[in-house]
Image (cartoon, one colour):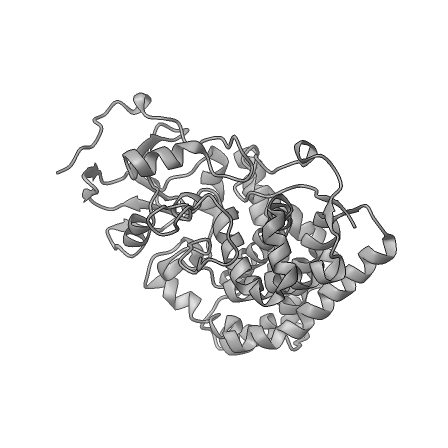
Length: 405
């Protein structure tokens, strides 16, 4: 077997690493890609874990049944103690291996099909236009996060779920509570259970008064016949709600800021809006908002790239690093909206690849087309050093983004 770095856990670097530049992943990732693509680290609880920093190993491990994605396992790796509490409370298929994962996921694939998402696009465009109208009426300066990045995904999820828009602030609070890195285990568990309880109440309301929305259709097709339990559905709804809000919100904010920092790329996009689909893929690659995922745990001893991964060791397939892999993306630290970035893994890979990625792409296409068409002179309205970044969250982004035009 390969090298396993022995039993001196304390000699290993503590993960997660801190960013020193908001536009680039931690420097340790690039060093690992050069020196040791499968790199050992220690976690807060002294568990040994391994970082997969290149795209080839990222893809390989996520398709390898010797590694489990079951959140409930006692040895499943987490970046904080609070995250352990969240993992143990997770009942949705995001934290399951096959065949249970596929059993539940297949009930929702039709709801997120390309056809259904494209049918939703005109509504996304109308929502975006209305929000930009409001920004224009209020006049500059505006906070792009509050006025667009938070509100657009929230309204789109309300359309999908048939949920009241006034509930979105509560949903966002629960999502942020799950993704923060500084909360206590008790706080994390409470926000997780609160969102599930909200979803259960919403399901009960939809069962009493069905409508033309995802919840009502799933209730009719799977819940009422007994294929899917109401509590199981509530857990899945909570997962979809937080994923549909938080990651897209952060991509809109940071993606816009990245374009501000690359005026030549922004000029290309404004001159040729047909580049928007390529631009969105490149922004997803470049930003990679989900910082410490996907995760796995080794079910047996495995040799990978000359390293011996022991049974029970944690695995972090680090998407921000895989998306900067020089072998897959030449000159990876350069933003180029004309490049083919379609190999990026910002939505994961394998069986757990993001169910809602089609919807996220539509929202981003709409935003980055409409935003700069409406405000061609849009620019940052503060110093870059005054932009508050989410260094304390597993989903990287900005808390605010002051803009003017």
